[in-house]
Amino acid sequence: MSMLFVFSLFLLLDVPKSCNAEKNYTSFMLVQQWPEGYCEYQEIVGAKRRCKSRPHKFTIHGLWPQESNGQLITNCTVTSNLTEKDIKPVEPQLHSNWPNLIGTDLNFWQFEWTKHGSCSENEFPKLQYFQLGLHNYAQNNLMEILEKAHIVPNKTHLYNATDVLSAVHKHTQHDAQLACYVDPNHNASALYQIGLCYADDGKTYKNCPNSRGTCRKQLMYPK
Ligand SMILES: *[C@@H]1O[C@H](CO)[C@@H](O)[C@H](O)[C@H]1NC(C)=O
Ligand SMILES: *[C@@H]1O[C@H](CO)[C@@H](O)[C@H](O)[C@H]1NC(C)=O
Ligand SMILES: *[C@@H]1O[C@H](CO)[C@@H](O)[C@H](O)[C@H]1NC(C)=O
Ligand SMILES: *[C@@H]1O[C@H](CO)[C@@H](O)[C@H](O)[C@H]1NC(C)=O
Ligand SMILES: *[C@@H]1O[C@H](CO)[C@@H](O)[C@H](O)[C@H]1NC(C)=O
Ligand SMILES: *[C@@H]1O[C@H](CO)[C@@H](O)[C@H](O)[C@H]1NC(C)=O
Image (cartoon, rainbow, N blue to C red):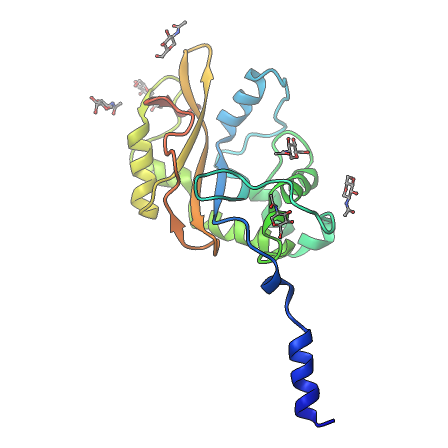
């Protein structure tokens, strides 16, 4: 057999896995949580789960594959569970920027991997997936972005949702998606999360659907 023949045979047989598998998501959402809001929300929804820390910055909740209408794609086939070894090179950054506010960090990363990350595993294996989340997070310091528009945490002030969205739009040129809960003490909508959307390459910004999300027209940015 000629070398060339053997080589072409090898090419024919070794079809990469990613060429076979059909991608079933069209976009990603990088969800950042605002700890003051997120922790209040956890207590209000009755889970009575206390936060062990409340970093004074937005932190990563997750990077979620979804369909273009915003429908999440979750609970895909997990070929192997996430272990600490898989994310060792970025573990310090994950502890700092992707912390579990209510439990142990590794449990949170495993949960996010099983529920969301595994759905884009063919394109973004474990380490690459967490690196992508950290990379996109580093480009979007939401606290700073809001501060530039004079939107700062405040116990009572109501901000217009449109102002919050336009502050983020100035930075990304695209629509974000907000998430709020109802603060029963003020009967007001309060911010706990902001999502930024990306195309299926995980890098190109894209408009999120339903920008105001679960927020009313005016909202608090809890302090
Ligand atoms: C996916 O799994 C999570 C965690 O086990 C569960 O809470 C959730 O209901 C599941 N979602 C769907 C759509 O099955
Ligand atoms: C989406 O694709 C992933 C990876 O190919 C697969 O594990 C999963 O089962 C698929 N999920 C759905 C809802 O089709
Ligand atoms: C991953 O962990 C879950 C829960 O601990 C277990 O049920 C499942 O079988 C594991 N999956 C794999 C592929 O090892
Ligand atoms: C919070 O909002 C109130 C009411 O709008 C305002 O008077 C106060 O100065 C604000 N506090 C801070 C720290 O921005
Ligand atoms: C919110 O928007 C309304 C209508 O555009 C405007 O009158 C109001 O001053 C705004 N409120 C704040 C706090 O910016
Ligand atoms: C709370 O606020 C909503 C929206 O502004 C209003 O419709 C509702 O009547 C208020 N509820 C109470 C108990 O004040």
